Length: 188
Image (cartoon, rainbow, N blue to C red; front, side):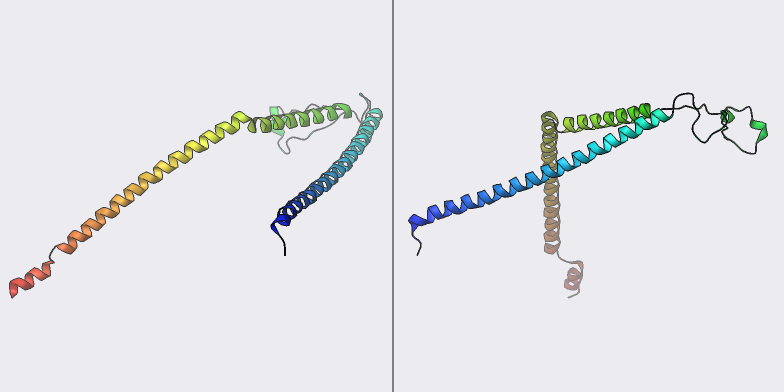
């Protein structure tokens, strides 16, 4: 039989054991997540290094002024319209000017655009989660709840009033003599 003197220490021991197990689970999960994050970081760093090496190799292969490999002529033709010789002087039929972007400039443009998008997203999330915004949302929610509560009260009051009127009308109809009963009394 367990006495009361042993019950309290046993309960405290059980609580301590459960807390220790919970702490152990949290530590294991955190270590696993950190290891996964390190692996992903190493993979992305390797991929980034490979891309930088590839871009440098392509930039060295193609120098400005050289024609791309596989093309023998310097002139390039762009077909914008077909089968309409009368529209040769139209603005739409003018050739599109060729723009060449080397690898480094392309990588710079892509990285800059990605950075701007990421920065604007983080700014938006940070602003959305700011204390002022959360307080404003909480205030608006309270206001909306109060408005809805008042509206429900008014609707319930109207429903009760309408129900009372119908009950009163039903009582009045029940208290009035029916027209068929009055004709029977007159005939008798």
